[in-house]
Image (tube, helix red, strand yellow):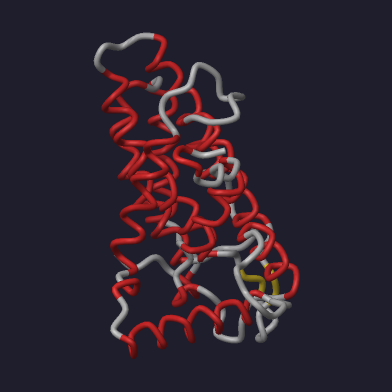
Length: 238
């Protein structure tokens, strides 16, 4: 059980799945709602919602969330400070994901990178077909997965650099593996996704001094390629 008789904290994978779904930005989701396979996956990531009625699709859950928020606003509830909730969520992730000796540890920074990599991999490779018949990569999920780890990673790296040693290794190895996953090609081109990827690569720059020059060179090549050769129909706007 938890401290003080509180219920035990969910397993890290379950907790991160819930935070991941709550990090999705509505403006990056399809206006008509996600396709069935996408909806089912997001509901599995979310876990069992606290609702008195069934939640058959992710779109229905989003509607329930919007109704709850509207009610809280009308009642003047303090619970509507979404920004503060997200800050607390990131602080929680940082607290429970310290540097770990092995990426296979059930908890710790290595597991955070591994789980976030799974979210990124699914987002890059599981694009569905839009109403217009074009293949679309899952931009919202890609963005949410990066948001889940960015702030925590920089704080963990800073804490592990002094004194440097085995703890630093436990940060750099999973951070490099996550970087490699993020730079994998997407199933289809999206200017929004590539812009978000460039933001991440810039944010991840604090790690580059610890990586081999070949790794940094590959990152630079990726940036240059996207900037110089974007498809004309969906160019990256800088």
